[in-house]
Each structure stands twice: as structure tokens, then as C-alpha cells.
Image 1 (cartoon, rainbow, N blue to C red):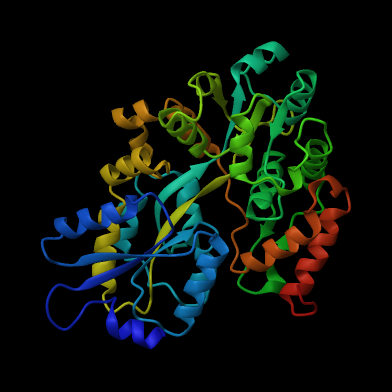
Image 2: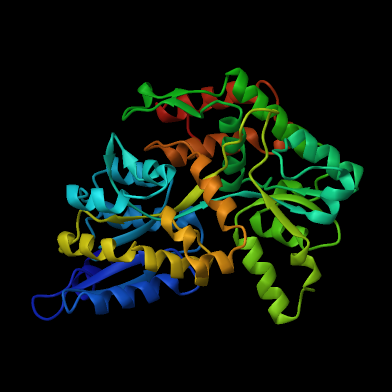
Length: 416
């Protein structure tokens, strides 16, 4: 299959305009639009075609890993979830980023986004769009509970406020990537790190799951999960589930990505949601674990990487440089709802109009912390989910069990 694809598509041909194939995560057509625009702007130097990956992030990784392991030349560009570049780089699947390109694409970019595209002190991918979770609240509920949302609030305060008003506190408790997003944000907010020291070999990785900070993060996770403020389906709740809960009459507070605002507005336009619902939406920085300690919101997004097996690496990096230009990021944010990695984009008038919370998103991204950066992220995630789900069962011993399991899996002593 890989040989056939390499013969039929990507990488261009001996004559005519070279074709670059960009494997993208599903969106609302924004990446295809950017590909068309950059193709036109190249004045015939290249043409970008997009190929869509599966919707699920692990499935995207699996498809790309299998094809790159077969030296598939039909892949030129890849949109990668921010947790995957280290694995791809360590496997030798990514073409080195030229020094001049690295300097251009990191200037004026959120540090967290740059960190997500860096491995062994070298830029290995190009930040495209960044993402972060905010604390969303119903203004009417917060006011009734007596919460001053102009000041930082803690998870304990949110539990108390939601329970006092008989409203929901929505978070993502299902056995998936979103649970890691939540716990890692709690851990970073408590002042800890999931991986305290990384390395190329499994033996050199030092985890931070038995620290006081990790135990505090576990305590908060369990407190939320076992409170009366979460819905009955909390252990299977996803980002979409939380967004739907927040549109209901039981809504109180929620942690989620910025897409929830655009989703609500779309439903208003479609006539399926009353305008009074999003009018009651408020937003603030991610909740703190402890009063007086700033939160470390989750960092998400997409980096663009160039395949080491592309027959047009130089052209691919020319294309990436075009793709991540500020004007493209601004339009992509407005039309597809994915926040920019470029700081300057948040001053764009159209972005400010489409996202009244643009300044809060920018502030959150300045504070955001990455999930564990490791070439073994899939194994780390699998071990975490095995021990930390359901979140209501998490206790002081969960971190120690997770460390033991992860080290055993990474060293080949145990199968996951």
C-alpha cells in the first residue's frame, strides 16, 4: 500500500509542479483553504494537497507511524498533536528543521508551543495552532454563589459553589487522553511535573508521581469526581459531553477548550439554542489547586512536521513557513475555532470580534504547561489511564502504582 501511494501521489514528479501531500487532522476545511492559498502564493514552486487523517488522535499517530516505518515517500507534511513530535523525532521520521526556518517560525510564538515542538534542545516541528482550556462559568450561578470571578478561584471553591447552587461542575472523567490533560494540569498547577527528568532511554526517565504535589493533584481529582457537583456519567464524560452539559439548565462551571463558545453560537444561529444561554457564559483562567498559587492550564494544539522521507524537504519547509504565517493563523482561528500559536494574532480585530475571550486565551497560553514530553508518550498514557481511571478511585497510592507500572512497561518487564 505504501509503495503504491508513493508511486501515485506525494512528493511531486519529474516534470511539472511538485506536489506536497499534507496529512491533516480533521477540521472545518481551514487547512485545505490554507493549502490552496499557499500553493497560489508559491508562484508554481509547489502545490499542496491535503489528505485527512482519522478523527481520533491515537489513530492519527498509528497511521503515520506505520507508514513512516515503511519509509513511505508519499508523506511530506504532517499535522501532529503536540504530544507526538518527540516519538517521531527519536525514531528518525522527521527532517531536521533548517536554522533559518526555526528562527522565523518561533519568533513571537508562545513558549509552551515552542517547547511542544522541541526535543533534545532542538526544534523538530513547527508550531501551527495552540490550544488551552479555560474555566467557563454561568455568570448567574457564580453571582448567586457569591464567587468573585475577577479573582483566581480554586477547585475547592468551585465544588462548594456548584453544590450550594445544585449545579454541575463539568470536567472530563472518561478513560482517554482528556483525563491525562486534566491530571497533568492539576499536577503542574500544584507545582509538580509528570516527568521530572526525561531521556532517550526508558531507564533515564524520572517520574514525579510520588511527590507531595502529585498527591495533592490526586486529592483534587478525587474530590471533584466524588462530589455531588458532577453528573452521573462523569466517568465517561468527554469534552463534547461537558459542552452539552454547560448548555443545559443544570450548568454551573466547566473546564474546556474554547470551541464551546463557537459551538454555542452555531446552535443559536441554527435555532436549537436560545441566545440567553451563551449570553450567560463567563470565562476565566483555569482553576488553581491551592489559593495563592497560579494555575498552569493545559496546553494543546497542532505542530506541523516534515517527513524525513519526503522527496522535497526544502519545498516542504517553504510551504510550512507559509502555512503558519499570522494572517493564516488568524483566519484559521476565526473560521475553524483553533487558537493561534502566534501571540500577535490575538490583537487582530476579527479575532477579537469572534472571540470576546481572546485576551483570556492569550493569558492562559502564556501560563500553559505541556503534557509529559517523551518519546514514549503512548506507553506513559496507557499506564496512566490504567491506574487513574475511574478518577473517583484515585488516592495517595495511585501515583506510586502508576510509576511502578510505567517503568516496568518501558523496560519490557511487563506488558500493558
